[in-house]
Image 1 (spheres, rainbow, N blue to C red):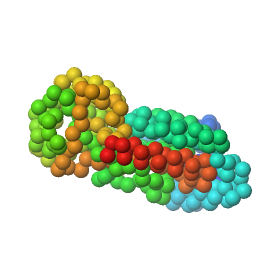
Image 2 (cartoon, one colour; image 1 turned 180 degrees about the vertical axis):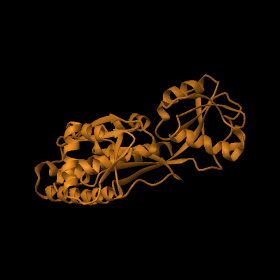
Image 3 (cartoon, helix red, strand yellow; image 1 turned 45 degrees about the horizontal axis):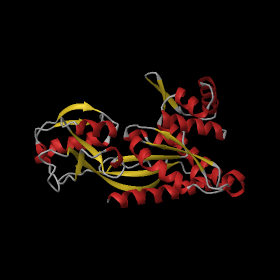
Length: 304
């Protein structure tokens, strides 16, 4: 049993297919399959099974993958004690963020790291459904993720979680709308309105579902848009209302759109920083994570 075979098994559990594992590890699918076969020879119970076209882990495979993750993390901790790369504060750090948080935080984060010998962040945008964020830690050192308060927590056995913000999602209104003069809104106030909202699986769509459940009024969704700048432009037209996060999308609003707090439902999302345990042993990753926390604190304080 080799460490790289355990890593492949773990990646298969996280990513769900041989092709995805090959892509994440920069090897061929056949090489992945070969290593899985070699690992299976040493284990007397099946580690994988076919599910449609995909190869997935059995319960025994999940147990071994979890044990393998612990081994990998321990090896990373050992390397951190002696490895120059691990201790270098200036080593590159890959950071993935969903669109609105990237627009709001990547610039301030660069400003905080603008010093000789500071880490060099490399940014990527990844706009995925909530349940798909943990798997991104296979590709990036740090992953900015969001989830609603009532959604399942991140898998603590797979990722380290650093809380950054607890962000309300507000109602976006044209500045001349009849409700714009209100200090706050309740679900019943929004009956009969037309909406632009995100695709299913994203926070704004979840909030609109909650509004509908409390008010008893089926929402009239006209547009499905994930980009908040586009949402704000459509709201400004006066044709629809939107659901927009308070801290991270403020720059997209312009002067023709106002945000109003929503009362009476759970409408906050948690913005967290996710990483694999072994990534957090690196000094450069630790520094970027700390700077990210400072940048978010400044942003939420400014808008809070």
